[in-house]
Image (cartoon, rainbow, N blue to C red; front, side):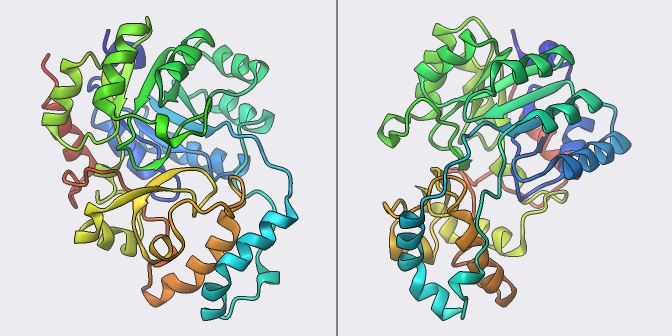
Length: 347
């Protein structure tokens, strides 16, 4: 089956949740066009998520998705923090940032009971998870609202695990995809595969619908995904230049520059592998140095650097998330892009 019946949408297009680069406005535009807009909750707290979902309800009554992270909050590791700050010392000195001024603690929280209360209050039709699934009791609370459950698999093993744990559909996240990898059963980057290698394996192995994600930028990619058995597609990077996107001006400029042709999986900006455009920080310290703290602690020092550099028009320390295929990025309304992508679906 395709996802139109499952998710009560008219176009088999899901807008990928992109924390930091969008809010309810992009999600509402996609939902109003007939696709499934997504609201990223990974950088929100219960109060800000409640406000986002209230604003979403004011713009559309169409179905939408809310996405949560399911990582484990790491324990403080002073030795690793010291090594990380030592690695970043030349950059901190360059912008006169006192390491003592860098905040500590986790800036991104996993899905918890407080977030479950927000879901219960707003009852979105779809709830998706990244980095696996929450605990059984939390997952059952979400299911009790009637929400359909999606989660990302980056390997065949993860897809089988997700199906066994009760998801309604699996997102096949190929290694081409921008932003954070959804990997959760292994941290081995070498085990990550491309969308059009992963997709048919998951389709053959699973009974639930499989949604293709990663490298899908236009109608031709949608047609190819459908031919390999996809029930629908999830698209992120192509939406970053849309009118309703909140991608920064520096991010928009990078996406339209020759530098967008070179992306890499890096742990520098958060502590977990994520695909973004190569910038100065990645070039000078490497994409995945051993000193990087666990997710999401790496983001504290990087956030201080980007906050100092971005007002000067410098993107050296900004996470310029992007997939390997930026060819679909266009400064157009999100509804027009959604319809253009759906033109590749053959029925």
